[in-house]
Length: 128
Picture 1 (cartoon, rainbow, N blue to C red):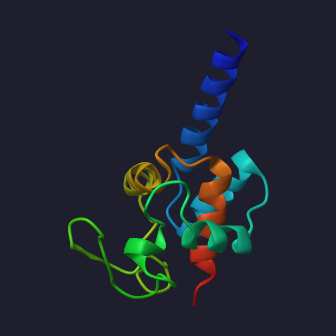
Picture 2 (picture 1 turned 60 degrees about the vertical axis):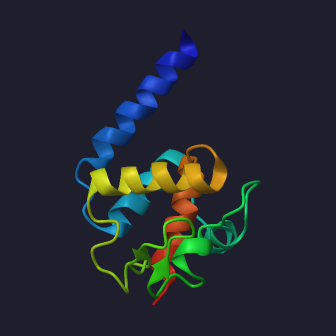
């Protein structure tokens, strides 16, 4: 019962604080509130390595993710992921949540933790 209450509180806290997120930095700030300080180096490491599955984030988004990539399975073009190279990235809550859910599942076989999201986003924001 206590774990369910904690989980419900964290979800409520996340959705209440991300409701106003409009920039990549806003999302990063909210993720850090839920996870602690982000790390650019951890984010880069996470982005470029595989995690038990065949793909890494860089498999489709390139390394660094500042240019157009290509989806490994579908061949579909993927716009640059780093916000400095694609200002529309990480600006709408619904798209950000959908992106993390889909891509974390592809790379990890599960959803990313708040810490993983914070680290990856910190890395992506750092790319200029």
